[in-house]
Image 1 (cartoon, rainbow, N blue to C red):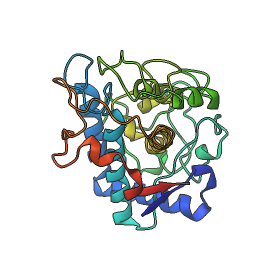
Image 2: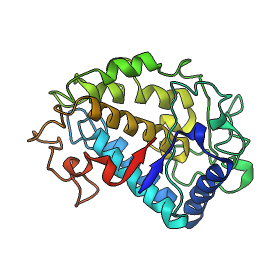
Image 3: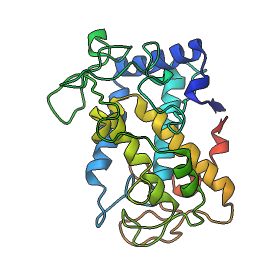
Image 4: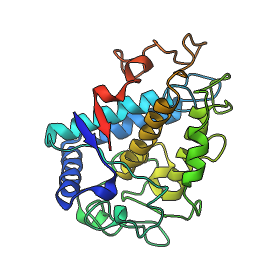
Length: 272
């Protein structure tokens, strides 16, 4: 049972173990498989067509499964590793420990956004961009350029207070918790953080930046928090229209998992 912690609470050893496991997955070629999967769904998920990983009710259970698979891959390298989360309502600046050279490395340089410090910098030779949307072969960031401010705790609390999980038309135009946390409506939580980081985080190949996992781990924690606050308001739709994933429908690319299977995170991991 993994114990997921705030990245700000990680010990130096836990940070090192996480980074080393990520680098080993990259060396083995397994990391890029996750990038390929995510990019494919960003490209195929649309408001009026099939939508599974994004713009839809299954955004949260899909990413919960995606993160769980990545965490299990990390644990195949080092069984002690668990995914940490980044609480961007607290760690809000490029000076946060998240961006230290002994963890995820710093901001990109002006001009091309190239990250030049930390274990994922181009100069390390350990982090080539093999799955990319342009010709640049290095990790890029532009912290706070696309949008200046990360979401606040007050904005998060307002979204957590929403009593309904989702609503028709089950896309980026929907009301409810899911679409507000995803960021197509309301205070724009998830999407805004991607834009704040910049670089590859603004593309379908966003897992090229390891901060992707810490960001989505916090989004998953927010879903868990919402579930505990609204125990009588679960995943909808139970029976879905065409192109939408219902409660007991399987979620691509997997053929063995439904949103219902992902509702109880405590069977897999806990948050502290």
